[in-house]
Length: 364
Image 1 (spheres, rainbow, N blue to C red):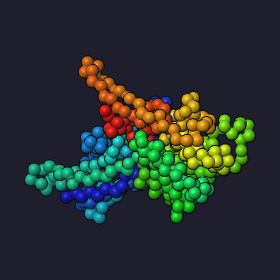
Image 2 (spheres, rainbow, N blue to C red):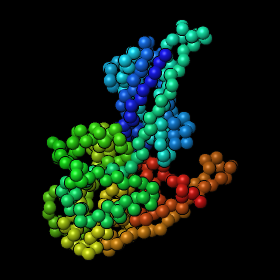
Image 3 (spheres, rainbow, N blue to C red):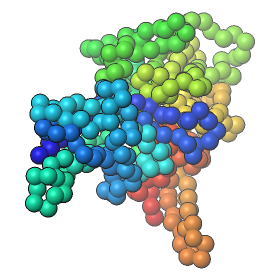
Image 4 (cartoon, one colour):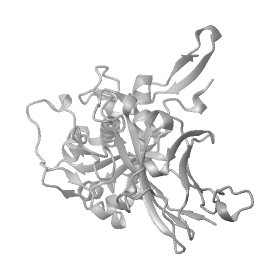
């Protein structure tokens, strides 16, 4: 008989297929880090099935077609009595992971003992599955800014609450002993997580990854008045690079902490929280949400009086219609806006992180 054991699923990142403007060929890269086949004979056939949160099967991959990252040139079906370990990377079309919730990869293998069964048919091993981690916005806090944020715990709560309204989870990673993550600067000048931290993060976290640090230069931009500057900047993964917005290739957000403190003073917490929401929106949407010309939107490109307090645009009614015209069916949603002023901004954030544009709780 054949026995199958499954290891964890890691999220490697987002592949735009080399065509950033065309989303039809975009894929999530999921790494089935290992599975083991126990038997005296190799498996005769194997498939990997993907189930969505509604437990509908949405995709099947043939194992022999996938590249085994453990054994070069292996078909992924080799077994032995002590367990033969394999690992594969599957490309999941983005459109197949549009629903919010848990996706499951099910390993479906057949043994090769047909000659020993009365019906002369191979038999399926007990199916095993692994869940994908829930997508979220992961913020890795650098050591410099971690020290400064210690005295302003309300700031992270304000950011959390803003994204929570649109059902996006912000996960803050504070590093060892909550003293900040030891970010390293690479030869290209970009910050990086330590390789062991990034590797471990891939095993557990899915979504958008952002490194957060204080502005390294510490200089004031005197070319503009204090009310006509922005106090944050986000660097996105380089075009054409692999595993964009993953722990290995994250976005980077810098904020001018000290300079903003001098300008905002008693409104500093709200000012910094709104700067962070602004910058994280760029990253979470994979740079599809640009700066906005509406001054009361958190995405306005300059500091304004609106950024010194809570920004709340209430909610907006959004209606979708059936793709089959003669049915005439419509669905209505009440979409919370919070600091953003359009449903398109909200949709871009959720989609960039790996969630569906609409949440079921918004349905009217």
